[in-house]
Image (cartoon, rainbow, N blue to C red; front, side, top):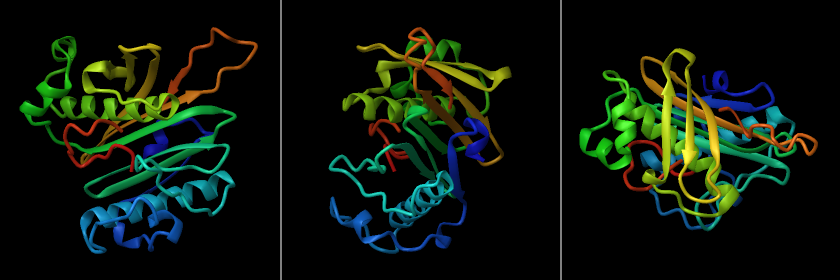
Length: 236
């Protein structure tokens, strides 16, 4: 499902039954220590995420290889690969691509349900609240889009990004969104979104800029902040 939002050169994999995922490889759970009980929902999500990551890497022609966590708990992809993992209740996905074609991938999945109003006020800028379409799960999509923005921002900068440091606006008929980061170096991103009966999905794929095309837009078709955990995850 997430593959519908990404260019053909991005390899994806997803699961809706986490019990189908095998155990993580030793390198994947070695560090930082995994303190989650083996049968917990978070443990199952982690297993499913790594299963999807290895499957997507295989489809890209890499591996299967382990995808360990760094000190910040972000996935450490093989050399020459960029990628992203997401999971929420009942859905997990991974997307990977060659770094020669893309500089970053960011994907996020959320349950298709309204975002609690108290959370929406914490993650949305005043301009976003004014522009957000009414009804449905648009608040949830806004949360998801900012998660995807963070997932392409953080690997490139090594810096935190707050919800109030990125502005997102949607083009509902086109199924697209635009995002502007409000702190240096002020990048902009273009992404895509999809809403199904159970899921709200967003994705961004930042294309590598050709050296002879310095003005080419960096954004192409397509988490997150730890202010709250709504079933998504900062990195996976």
